[in-house]
Amino acid sequence: SMQWIKAVARADVPEEDVIAVEAGGREIALYGVDGEVYATDNLCTHGNARLCDGFLTGHEIECPLHQGRFDVRDGRALCSPLRDNLATYPVRIEDGVVFVAL
Ligand code: FES
Image (cartoon, rainbow, N blue to C red; front, side, top):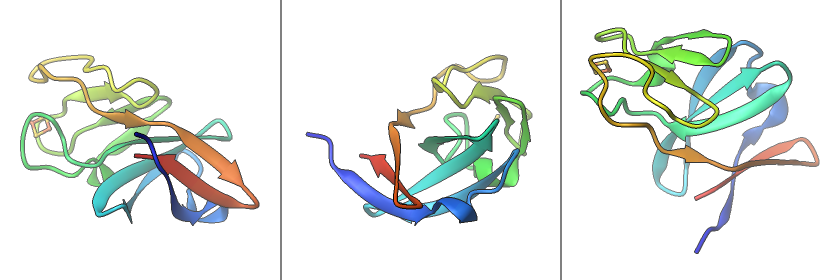
């Protein structure tokens, strides 16, 4: 069952950028897009690269290793060489704190 895990202060999620946080023993990437916060796994589904080192453009995160792109809203793999979608997690903001459901 899902559990809401405290991740980081809302103010620490950069606008139009990505940071990595540890939550529930996992590494999660948090994205600030248009005032919203989205959460995905931080590890690319294609190889050993961290998406927090990639480039966020709108809702798309580009992997730094082979430039695969995912939609951060639903984790959809948008182009080659990606084959597998990325896990995403529900986000809740409460009292200035970001919680993710893991
Ligand atoms: Fe991310 Fe290859 S490791 S696209």
